[in-house]
Amino acid sequence: PPPPSLTMPGPRAITDFQTTPNPLALRCAVAPPLPPAGAGAMRSYSSPAAASAAGDRLAEALLAIPGVTNVLIASEFLTLTRAPAADWRAIKAAARKAVAEHP
Figure 1: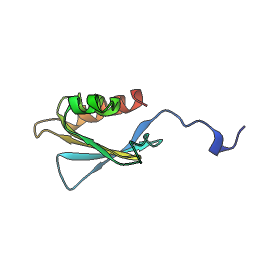
Figure 2 (figure 1 turned 90 degrees about the vertical axis):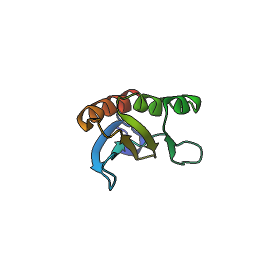
Figure 3 (figure 1 turned 45 degrees about the vertical axis):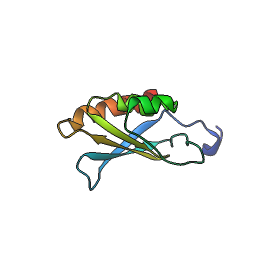
């Protein structure tokens, strides 16, 4: 078999959910890394329209999750912010699906 460095990465997935100092925000570790935007900069959106205008399909899908109000995307993680009444369990399940479906 080819050396590990030459093999194709597996499907993208959220590997861990981590709390943040903000109780309305959740950090999601992602592997393999997400494609960079521009020169590897993080990107942030607070509306599906802004994500759509930027051509960011992953951000658009994450912001379509009921209760998600903001998305910050970096190469190895993303952070989701929710509305106060939104349920993390439902958001986590939908976020896992969005990350897997939007390479």
